[in-house]
Image 1 (spheres, rainbow, N blue to C red):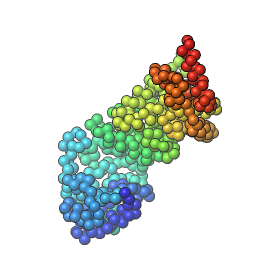
Image 2: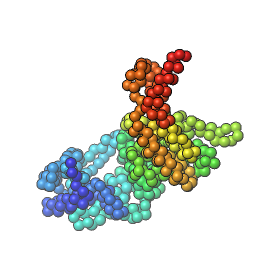
Image 3: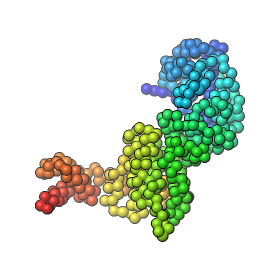
Image 4: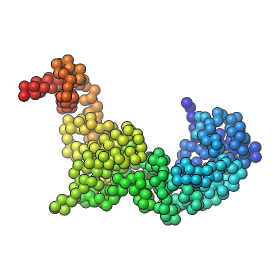
Length: 456
């Protein structure tokens, strides 16, 4: 399926605006396309709001330009097939309950610009641009706030109606590298976010992790709002957990995590699975909250935190998503995150690095995480030679994996019967393979060891 380019969609938006104008209405670009355009940023999606036409008239008009997709016909929201265009009508909204779906929505084609934009969350998202003439309509000071990097609510009463705006404020603060205006921050502190669907929270989290240059701003903002506790209690538990200042001059575990997160953002374009990679950076040291101890000599240690953190990581992620593959990837990264730097610093033997990469769910991303972890220490310079060493060893692992290896069929053919010890012999053959033995020698060694065990 071929989807229009942004330029094609924008040309189509102007044509819609021309025809809407001929029919007595007015088509306005709204939301991200206006905000990002003022910032000189590319925007994939184009949202249009059409004033002065009834829903049936708008649908009929759109049908002359392509196949209409009803994305919310009762709410006056339409799309055109093979485009990234959403065409909506102005509407009134009134909260009727605590859940995010508890809104009474009614379409009003004759709604004023002021009434329509008042329901927007922040001033930077409440600007409109005439899709035909390009004229900017900015009733709430959004352009000035954008230039000054300020996240400000549009209206106190309407802002309170959607608790997701707490997370959107944090997300936009991170993406736009902006500060949250004090009154908006106070409103966010007062809002109850416990009724939000985890899917919506995860969506805002993902945007912050994948689009912000400094995703740490998202979590620092939530901390300022006192809203880490509802969805990120395992992360909040890292606040105040001190680390050995010799190795971590940056401060507590939360501060280290935030620095690692920002370092990871600079590496995520190189990751095989960017979202899972960023979540690994976020959770990698959760175990320190339970593993950290102060020894009799005053030394701070966190022995085994990469293992003790696994159930905490699982709990944190399952609160936000049910994606099993993602959860297992992140837990695997947590378990192994310390090993690459240890092996790189001592320039370990090939057998050790081969074993490490064989355990990893994604060796390429594990190398990147180890780089971010070593970099998130108060501005300490990362030794790029360590990454070069690890990548050279990853190529070595791949070459070794291309060579013939002992299989279960080989063991059965040689006389070993499947049973409780069988998987152990197969794993032993794999380790001998990593030690450099060819298939024949590895098989002979395993058979000799198995015979010795039987004699015992």
